[in-house]
Amino acid sequence: GAGVSQTPSNKVTEKGKYVELRCDPISGHTALYWYRQSLGQGPEFLIYFQGTGAADDSGLPNDRFFAVRPEGSVSTLKIQRTERGDSAVYLCASRRTEAGELFFGEGSRLTVL
Amino acid sequence: DQQVKQNSPSLSVQEGRISILNCDYTNSMFDYFLWYKKYPAEGPTFLISISSIKDKNEDGRFTVFLNKSAKHLSLHIVPSQPGDSAVYFCAAKDSGAGSYQLTFGKGTKLSVIP
Image (tube, rainbow over all chains, first blue to last red; front, side):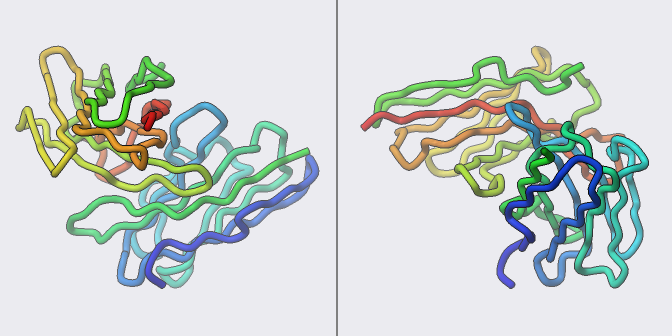
């Protein structure tokens, strides 16, 4: 597609449940990023993929969070045993490796009740 | 500890006048700075950037100024238009971070009044 696509756009779940959020980056972009934006805050870095591998996962808050990108294109962010504090907009972004800026998707709004 | 600070949560400007959005940072390892614009229910979109080796970058109505000694940058929009109403995020890249991860401020909501 023309832009970064994220699904679902909205997800409401109950505390303790498992959630998957999907990101389809811009075609040809090898670098993929996940950010989280909580209410009243700027986006915060979670994890960066270069190709299929997670090159930097230093932003993941704890081991309940995990992300994969098995074929170097689509990525899935997985959150286990969700907590109310996980409620936020999860943003995915991609860029070409050599140059250029980050292109963000519209985000997936997660609400944990 | 906020490394990128946008101390004004909101700003209102009359259409046609200048909008000045400010950003301060604390990390001297930041070497590249960006401004993103965000409309409701959309992802941030890149607006303009500046390398730490420059002190000014201009793109149409948008100019970013960087004062390295003061660890301060600003975005000027001239003339402001109602379509500029959005949240503006200042972001910075750490020269020591190989992953191009960005550190964002909390944003400033700009309202341009017709």
